[in-house]
Length: 293
Image (cartoon, rainbow, N blue to C red):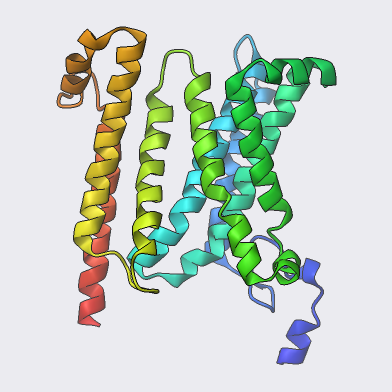
């Protein structure tokens, strides 16, 4: 097929998530990622059909869609660092897909929240206005929906590359607000919110550090190591500060000791350190491969 024929294919016929390029050819890589992004939704639909969501199914759906939305948002933010660390440009193909999926999960999260209030505007507005964590979550969602609305190639052309990039940097404050919302809304178990915060700390640290590097240059291996240690220590410090606020300062040594023991399972800070260590190893292997080639 020649170039003229490829470009004459209607956009809707070559714009499916599992397609790639102007010709709209099938991409196994993108298809696998698309299927993976669908799995949480299919799992929740199956649990709903099986009446396996507990005594308050709508509340459980609200929690699960919000949790998966934040997780997938983090995955979308990890695409660029991993593409640079692995020196694998094809990862850029899934950045938009994962970002769109995160926004859709979080939009579903809010839609289910409204359904839980029978879509009565007065009840919804009153509930949000009196809860700080709901206001924070709504601001994060508005930012993400704005990015979703401008995620198309047509909007990129209309806004221009520079303005489009500046607008889409809103994803970082949106992610921070989303993590904060998640942390504030939990009642007792802060394990997953702490994981999210730790990974987000690594991501933000990476982006900030990269801004000081020459264009196109990857971070040195020692910087990746420092980022991992920093994110893990910050996660531990936030955990200690939380329990100090909830229980008292006397508990801080026990919280820090728990991070050095496996008797109570691995704490969030240790998981962040292990994940960062994995990234460091991958970065080291990618560096060796690049020097040999």
